[in-house]
Amino acid sequence: MHPGPTVQALLKSAFEPCAGFAGACPSANWSPAEGHVPRGFCGAIGEAGEVRLVLVCAELGDPHESESHEGDGSPSGRLFSVSNYAWACFAHERISFTGMFGTC
View 1: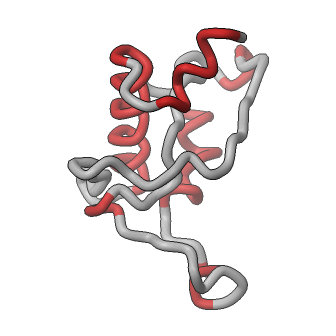
View 2: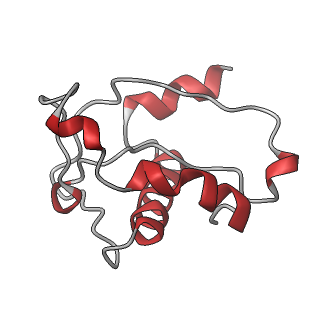
């Protein structure tokens, strides 16, 4: 399950290296091969106008040891990889972060 084209376009820049890594955020880590990209995204699988809630959470923790989000090297490939991984974590309650949503 992946977001529609409009949501993909809105998120594209989040799955490219940020210019802030060389400036305002030098301690930020960008390494898709090691899972260091914006993570935890899933949802918005319809049209952008159907989205009713957006949760932005910080500090999801370090990537799992086997986590990698190189995809095909494109922002869309990384977004799809992150989305697939997040859905799998929800399905298998693989990280404690996903457990918090079961109580909402």
